[in-house]
Amino acid sequence: MAETGGADQLRLFIERIERLEEEKRGLSDDIKDVYLEAKSQGWDAKTMRAIVRLRKMEKHARDEAEALLETYKASLGL
Image 1 (cartoon, one colour):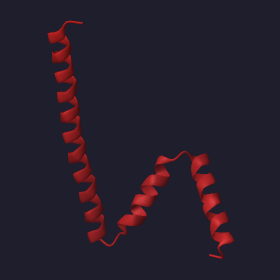
Image 2 (tube, rainbow, N blue to C red; image 1 turned 30 degrees about the horizontal axis):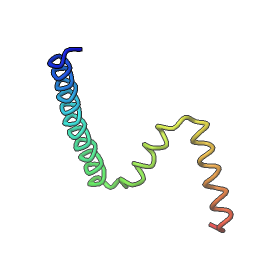
Image 3 (tube, one colour; image 1 turned 90 degrees about the vertical axis):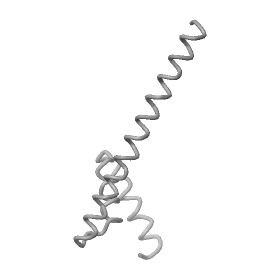
Image 4 (cartoon, one colour; image 1 turned 45 degrees about the vertical axis):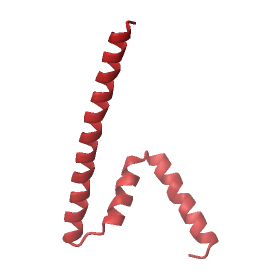
């Protein structure tokens, strides 16, 4: 690989990453705005975030996590 070609390719990769990072920041801001909007209408953002995390999980992983939580709660008398 030629020195100049390698530097050009590296610069292009870095610029792509920078653009994607900017898009990611924009999406994060949009998500935050949706949670704020929901909160302003009386919804609990913390609970909504928990639901979003649960929905990302596969059913068997979610069932296992919920069973562990129940076991731990029972051990602590909750």
